Figure 1 (cartoon, rainbow, N blue to C red):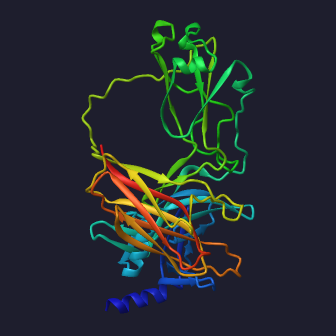
Figure 2: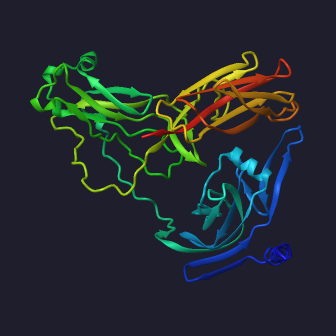
Figure 3: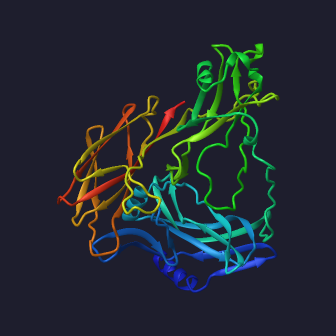
Length: 442
């Protein structure tokens, strides 16, 4: 009876998309017609598998099917599910989801305004998949009812964003000294370093030291996001400034940020390389006014309402050595083909060995044959990644290959060994990056 019921439900509901709008409230429901796992080939022997339902948009970055619906509304909405119906994913579907790194236990609904032919419309979207931790299995959504309320102040407006610009840069006056950092962390400027840049520490008032900087990461490529149009002063610590002199044991302490960023995506952290600089810069100057300082507050005496004994830590190997077609933003780290065995070690001294580490590797391969990359972790065979052949007569220069591995570490060192097994001398593989995420004991 169950199978007959679902067939009837699909045959009726696929023909009707139920949509109602009362005032600004939005409600709709839909059945998703899953097609299982599809295989796509580009005609050169290369193929890949992905999950699909009728009308899905398959996202290239992760190969997951996205549900999206355009609403003729000029507001963004807060959406919630009123009713849902899930079924278990098949073993093949589960294998693809595990490889993608997707492990969301709840469906995240997004509502955004886009402009289509100069007309603003709302687009609601989500991945109709979840990992059921109670069942320890993946599930796919086959029917849902959704309702949405407009967010306060979310009405689309074509009016220009009002921005206030500085009359002139702070760099216009004074003497400035530039410092560069490559990694996020605490940095110090000592007595001797001030001497090296031409400052006599004994002749200055340490309370009038100023440090400027605008945080880490790359500036947004879009002009729409707000950003500072001038350097912003930072709050710093100047140890020993209370006596009015900068002595040999005094120092300036500040938090410097990397030019690169980490972004959480599908259960791992993706490393976003700054495309334009390997360093982030901070600027020191002296003035007649006292500089910003970090304030201290008393510790709270309240009882904690949430305790965490572990936290995420993540490391990456990602050098920018090869641009395969001398164009575009993607650069690769190491080339395999002449040197075919390489080791990459990640150290996590406080690793929680009861939790699984997530290791994500990405390659590009250019080979006319079906080659293989063997992955060993801590000297033990772990997996084999198949490199798909390229038809040299086609426009595509190389295929990309991603793999997510889950490893139960027994100690603080995680050594990833990659051994490339090329069929011919012309075969080449380039490593893009290895990301490693672990839980550390707090």
